[in-house]
Image (cartoon, rainbow, N blue to C red):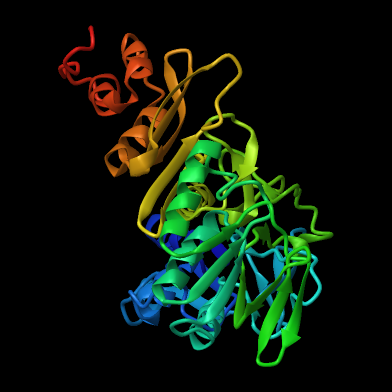
Length: 422
């Protein structure tokens, strides 16, 4: 059996390793798009913050790792796929045949249609080469504008702040982290960042970027901001254009079933490029986060190797540090129709907890400044454990979530918090 994996990110690497373990007699070829060793994009901010070196971003560190496993590692990008022939065409003009194919080509930065976004000094933070240019273009007191305050933007925000730059964040939505945090939590995050010396402009859009001597100037609706560097973090798009004419069904990403297989037998997809089952709703969604990519890669590879392995679905899951303030959102954090909500907050101390229930089952949560709750919240949501009388206790005091988890999700007898009736 000849397996070909397109993409050298976490989904592709884990898939290739899983195929080797589960199908020892097969051949595995892993195609990476960059000249670098396979690495994690999520590690790039740590590189920018100088917490790790470049080798710290690599997914595997042992010398000759892929060779030792019998995985052929090649550089190239797929330009087309011909499923009827079992062939992939690469950008160097060569072709590669396969019996089973995994498409794990990831995503790329999406830049807004703003004049001047192609100027030197306007960067994304998506590749090692991007990180090198940002590091070379910033020093203490450099003026940097960060476009976008979503999940990726806030990770980059922390890395830039660690470099000692004078940072301005521009977000066109009405709050920071609009896809993972509600108004109350986002207001705390904005206030936290401003207290740390970061200027945050929400409900603001960059109208244009122009060259200004050795730097740049940005028009944000009549107000001009001078910058030495602009970092754009305004979202990503799955790399699916090369599939045109292949017959592989796509929507926002590549449509896959609960085995991560596409509409064509023997062709699978994983990671940022895959639009697969959502844990909470059962609908097919793109979840562009590394834990999903890793599990996608494992499940897809098991099925490619002939070991029937259903995928439970991706849980909406975002855990983030923004200048040291830990935030997390899980599952249906915006709630469900007819559901109940419990909220407790301490604005002065930047602490916030919101629980969303469907009946007596916890289906979503938000937390801010409460690191002890993060794993417990995820566990309760993923187990879908009926809370019974604990639901009312949590409505009264959401901080009892640990006790509820121990009793309901783990089946252990724990004592209720003093003052709360059992």
